[in-house]
Length: 203
Image 1: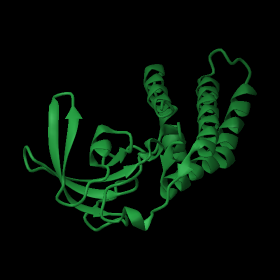
Image 2: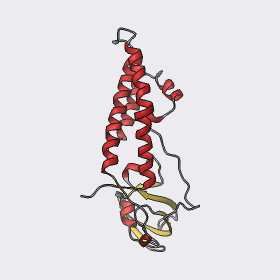
Image 3: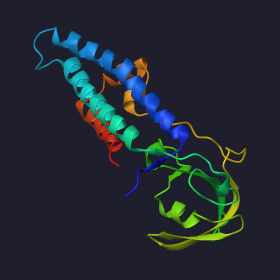
């Protein structure tokens, strides 16, 4: 089985996250853990337990990113792709059933970053669209049955008709102010944050 695909932009974003976690966030949280530990009794020290857990999450993410970046294959645009849907393509598609129009970007599974208009190359929709040209139809297998989509537009440079959604940052890459806010949350709320973050590491 070959290496998972990723676009050059996606690879750069993952590398940026790794650099931030390793050079900025990890040293900051390590310092907070050391400070909290110096206060004495750790059994009821909320700052110590929270930041210790956060440090563990950071270290797991760093290990994942290091492994991930070594295992990914960056795919650049090739002129032979022009006019057809392949990896890295932006496509505008229209539903046969209700005329709904969607603009999507086909990327690697590691670079969706929470953006709903970016879909994995391994998704049923992407698989159905691969190799299609403008005006072709693609049949997508869904839990509720087969759905047909028509290809309206294809581009390999970000087109005007594709609205770039902001990358959804995980808990660990938020600002210091946000981290200060969540330190005041209950144990139940913190557990939910941890669970949501751990989901980002399940591939």
